[in-house]
Image 1 (tube, rainbow, N blue to C red):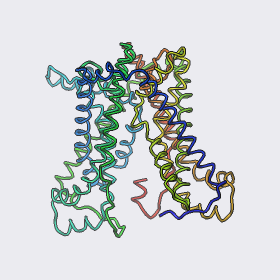
Image 2 (cartoon, rainbow, N blue to C red; image 1 turned 45 degrees about the vertical axis):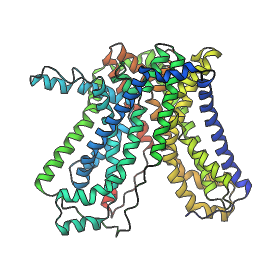
Image 3 (cartoon, helix red, strand yellow; image 1 turned 30 degrees about the vertical axis):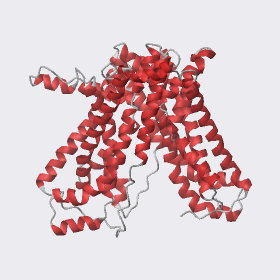
Image 4 (tube, rainbow, N blue to C red; image 1 turned 180 degrees about the vertical axis):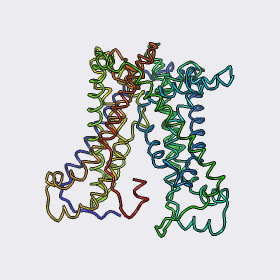
Amino acid sequence: MIRPIHQSRRQRLPALAGGLFVLLVVTAFVGIALTALLAGRLSGGLLSAFADPVIRSVLSFTLWQAFLSTLLSVGLALPVASALARQPAFPGRIWLIRLMAVPMGLPVLIGALGLIGIFGRSGIVNNTLTGLGLDQPISIYGLTGILVAHVFFNLPLATRLMLSALERVPAEYWRMSASLGFSPFSTFRFIEWPVLARVIPGAAGLIFMLCVTSFTLVLIFGGGPAATTIEVAIYQALRFDFNPERAVSLALLQITVTGLILAGLSFLPAAPDTGVTSGRHFPRFDGRRPLVRLADGLLLLFATLFLILPLGQVVVSGLQADLGRLLSQAAFQQASFTSLGVAFSAGLLATLLAYGVIAARADIATARAQNAGNRIFSLALAAVSSLVLLVPTSVLATGWFLALRPRGEVATFAPFIVTGINALMALPFAVRVLEPTYREHRARTGHLAESLGLSVTQRLRRVDWPVLKRPFLTALAFAMTLSLGDLGAVALFGSENILTLPALIYARMGSYRSTDADGLALILGAICLVLALIGAPGTRIAPNNPRERTDA
């Protein structure tokens, strides 16, 4: 429990004022978009759109592809996580775990290009199948392509969550299973499955939510009448049909769906602690049998190939492009300048908003007086930092598009709206990066700063910033990476209004200039890699603890 800190009103005021400012800004940004969506459109005609069989078909496909994607991602991640936990000495294990972090920060468009290069009509897989005499190769487009792409991006996430849970199993459990002579199946049934069963609901719910709100992957691999999600249908209603009524109906449907999913996720049980242990690590003997080692090795090899081949394809294809010509093109320079400007502005805004939320909530948590007003304020800050999960970016972009259209040229406002949407999109992640370090730092130094009588400025400059600058930089880099890879908000405003690197890549793909698209994707990936390295947290190696060294 956090001990209360005695602070004067003058010391607490900046944090509370900052939190209130964030609350007002985010609420206003989302509220204007929703008001523009609903203004004058809550008519019978609008509500009757929900009875449209086409919209019902879009809703059915959205939920169906999300269900299948979740089932495949979690179902395949389960044996991969178990094999990784069972084979701590597997060659390259730590690099495979690190490789699984790449799709989570990789721009979706780059991963899509890599998958097309591997599973496309002229890809490695289809060329191999054709060479084996099969006349009907795999089609990467439609539901199959959407599922493959969602598994590529979500399998690593599910695997890392499950592996983390398995590595927290007390060593006493493994010692007991070894002493009782458990077979691999018994070990899985009595030790691993009870642990995984507590993690799977949360992981599956998160992946289902990500797949329901998926836009870029569905736009590239689906998009037809039979393979369209709600997010893509909103884009098509505005960009191709220019039917605001239909776009609003779909946006309201999207909010309803995401709201129900978030409500359902809130009822999922949290994974409980595994209990008090001795803290010592114990080698697992169930993974030492030859057949188990062979099966685990093959499984991990396939998982590695599934993840690394699309990434390698992007590098190989990108190097075949004329990078010098691409770099000298005016369109690339304009797109790069716009992307970096929007990404830096959105990343900085998201990080500052996150800091405002965290500082205010921490101040409320450590205050001596805990009243209903403080608790409501803290809950409102927590909710507003995740508001974009309830109101997806396509809904925000649609609302702002409708709000700005009567006031002149939308292109004038496009960079500011895209920056705001990207900042809001990165806000939940920035909060999760900053909050643990801030709370730990606050608990460690709060009473010392109080006893020294430091002012707010002195505390921020001498106590907080030296510790928080690294996580602040990490959050900034991560938020910039998310913004650099975003295509959703930009697509709704049109590449003629704001040209970013993802929009330029998508335009080159649409004009069948795939070599240029591969080269641009390689450049975008290199920029994101540099950002990831800049923002990477420092690694502390414990000389007497090799496990900490490998897991760092």
